[in-house]
Image (cartoon, rainbow, N blue to C red; front, top):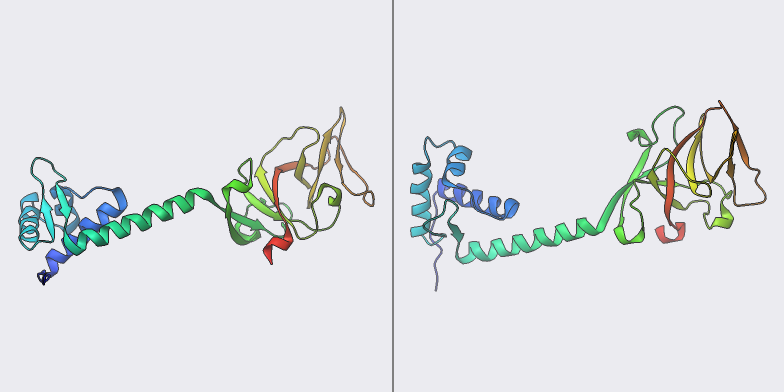
Length: 224
């Protein structure tokens, strides 16, 4: 039966440092890095502790390289588990987006101001052909015939310009609205997709700004 050797507090501290470095960077620390981290006067002091850890079977020292430290026994198995967990978390983060949900927007303030963020949704990156920057909760049914319903979350990519026919998030003075964009020679029209609503005509000189482009939609029924 294998009996795990007892480590001193300093040896355990160095072993923890090695494990942490491998988890964060994929490689063990150098003797100089250990000395700097733990306040040793020289790398030789770190080497003495590493030799003691090797004699106790906690690590294996590989000659010829400054990072020649390998974990052994239970430490090695624990490190494999940690690396597997870190890899899994990295893959998950690569496939998910953290998108702030914007509620009501205060007049004159940036749409992504912190006070406008109701919460953050983590959604699959594959849901969108173009990467969104935030979600905007739809209010009203003016875009009903485009499939955008009251309570839906519109995925929006920040932008300051748009092509004719694109669905945009636009700021009109104190209001933010979702409409289809059309630019003419002297005016801009924001078109609803519901015959019960009238187009919004923006004359030259009137306060108007594009905040973003619609790049996807999360149906409100998916949030229940």
